Image (cartoon, rainbow, N blue to C red; front, side, top):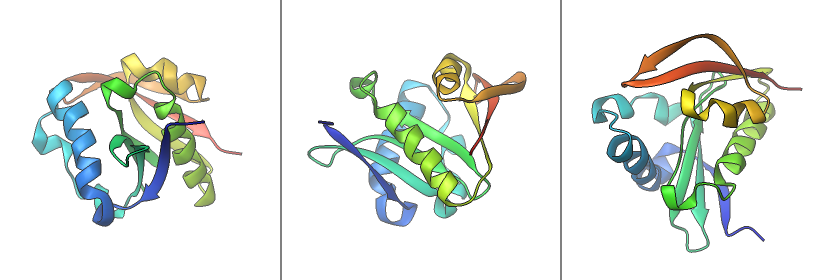
Length: 142
């Protein structure tokens, strides 16, 4: 039995818990400038929040209206325990439910193999965002 669950929510209801995860992973751990982390896309996105059995936030992702998956993060203590896979699966389900035939994301290059295992294909050249190498990846949905 899983010791976490994935919630589909929105920024208005879960900003505090979503922000804690993103701050810990992107700003504190990876050094992303705070001015680049927060943007207006959060308000209109489907937010996915992973919580442990006590309701503590342990991971997150978002799905934009155009089918772009992003801001996927898992706290270090929870990595390797299926949280990322569950977040990605929930994001793909949400995209399919919204009628997207194609989803895309900007994967940090160290995580590209993770997304490839889920059926994503790299397209285009590597690029740098917030000082971190990324690659655009697409996945067609059935």
